[in-house]
View 1 (cartoon, helix red, strand yellow):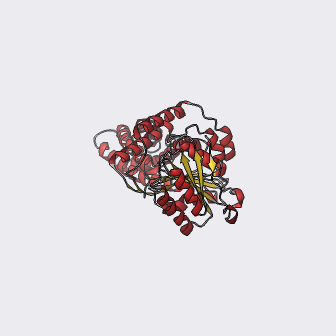
View 2 (cartoon, helix red, strand yellow):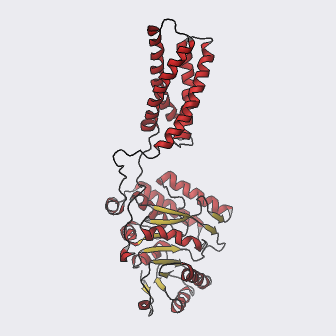
View 3 (cartoon, helix red, strand yellow):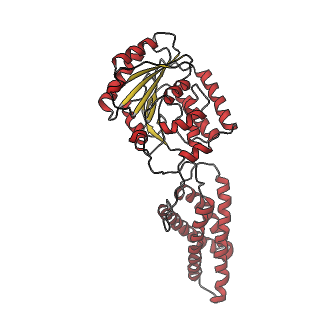
Length: 418
C-alpha cells in the first residue's frame, strides 16, 4: 500500500474539521464528481461544523483518480487519498488512521442514504454521548426502496449475525457510519478484514468492548449500478463470521479504556422498570385471582376443597405465567417458554403450600367454616402468595442478565475541545 494525499494550499485558511467524511471509490469516474459536489453543497449549506471530505481511491484503473484530484482543486475541504490495493476496509482504515478530525464518517459514493440523516448520525458522537453511529435500513422509521433480492439478503445477513455473534445492532452493512477518532484509534488495529466485512467486524468489536452504538433510521434508495459482487462478498462475510465466532479477540484493554462502566443505583433507588412491572403484575394478578375464585367455586360444587384448590391454582398459574411473561416482563417468542413454564410451576408450588396450609389450618380455628369464610381465607393466602410470586418472577424466573453495553456513561470531551 502506498497512500498519498494531494496537498491543499487552502488548509491554513480553514478551521480544523470536526467531521471527516470518507468516500471509498473504485472505478467511479462517471458518478464521482456529481456525488461529491452534491455532498459538498449539502455540508456547506446545512452542516453546522467545519468538515472535510476525503476521497479514498481503491487502486482505480479508470479516470477516477484524475476526477478526484480535479475536485480537490476546486472544492474547499476536499482531499484525496490514493491506495495501490483494493478493499473498502483498507481504504477506511487508511483514511481514518491518518485523519485529525475528532469524528470520522463514511458513506457510499452513490449517496443512496438521504443526507438529512448525517447530522443525527454524528451529533451523538460530537456530544460524547455515543461512540459509534450507524444508519439502519431495517429499523423502525426507515424508508427503503430496493429489490426483493437485496432486501432478503440484507435481512438474512443481519439475522445470521444475531444468531451467530449475538449482534444487537440492526444493520451491519449500510454504507453510512461514523466513529469517534479516539475510539477508532483503539479499535482499528484489532480489525483484520480489509474488504466488505470490515464494517461488521468493527461493530462486533465495539459491542464486545462495551461501547455505545447509536442507530439512525434512514431513507435509502438502492443504486441499480452497485459494484458489489454478491457471491464472493457473501463467502468472505461467512469466513469473517466464522473467525469472530471461533477466535479470541483481545478486547480487555479497549474495554478498560473506553467501555462504559456498569450503572450503580444510589442507595434507596427504585430499580429500573419496577413501578410499571408492579402495575402490570397487579392487573394480571387481579384477573388471575378472579379467575381462580370463579374456577374454585365451580369445582367446589363437585369435589372437595383441596382438589378444587389444586386444580384452580394449576390452571390459573399456567395462564398467569404466560401473561406475566409477555405483559409484565416484556418477553415474547417461544425461546425458553418451556423452561419458564416449568419454573412457573415451581413458583406455583409455593402458592399451593400457602393456600393449602391455610385451608388445613382453618378447621382448627373455626369448626365447620362456611364457604364464604373459606373463600376469604383463600383470598388472603393468595395475596401473600402473590407477593412471593412477584419477587420470584422478577428475581429468578424472568431476571434479565446485564449486557456488555451499559445504558449510560458521562460524555467525554472530544479532542480539540469540541
